[in-house]
Length: 331
Image (cartoon, rainbow, N blue to C red; front, top):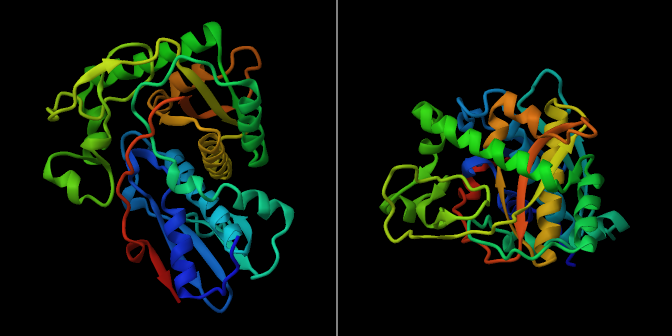
C-alpha cells in the first residue's frame, strides 16, 4: 500500500489501471475527465466505439465501462485514496456514467483495504482463448467468486448438467446465425487486427490473441478470424467439460449494466488471484431471444449479463491499450 498526493501523475496512473479492463472486442468505449479543484474523475461513454449491430442498446458498452470503473476503485484504494462513486449522476447527460470523488489521501477504510488486495491482478488478468484443464474449480473458490459479484450488486451462478448443456447449445446457435448472416460479423471484423496492423494496434483484438482454432471439445469460444487466414494459428483440443459461470443482475437498465461491469471485473480479479484463467463470451447475449433462454430455468429470475469460462490453464497475451492521453482530459 502506498499513499501519494493527488497530482496529475497519480490521476494518469489511475486511469491507466482503469483502462486495463476488458471490453467487448477490446473497443475501450470510455473517456475520463478529471476536475482538479473538485478532486472528481468523470467516466463517460465513448459512443464512437459502440457496436452498431451487436450492441445497439449499449448494454455491453456499459458493462465494459463498469469494469474500468472497478479497476479505478482498486487502483485508487492501492494509492491510499478512498473512491466515492456516484453512478449516472446527471439524468440530463446519459453519456456521463459515473463521478468518482477521490477522497484523501488518508488511511484506507476496511473496504478499500480489501479492494487494494486485488491490485496486482489488474495487469495479471488477460483473456485466455486457450484450452483449460478439465479439473473442477473448488467450491471455496466458487464461493469467493460469488461473494465478489454480490458485493457489486450482481449474482454469479455456475450452471451444471442440462442447464450447462443448454447454454453451450445457445452459443452454438449464435455461431450458426453468424454463418447464415455475414453482416452479423460487421462489428467483430471492425475490431479485429490482422497482419502488420496487429503489431501497432492500440485497440481491438490482435491476431496473436485469437488463440488456436478448436479442433474438438465444448469450450464456448468465438472465432475472431472467421474465414480469414491467420498464419501459424493451428488448432487443438479444448476441454470437454468447460466450467462456465453466468453473471446476473436483478434489472436490465443502464444502472444494472454498470453494476454488472463492476461485478464482472471483481470476479475476474478474484479469479486471477486464485490462479484461474478466464475468457468471456457475450455471443449468445447479443440475440434477445437466446439471452432469455440462457437464464436459470428453475429460478427464472434476473438477467444474464455475461457468460464466463473459467479454468486452470495458460493466461492469454496482453492486448493493446490506447495511450492514456487519448482518453483522459484534465481541467
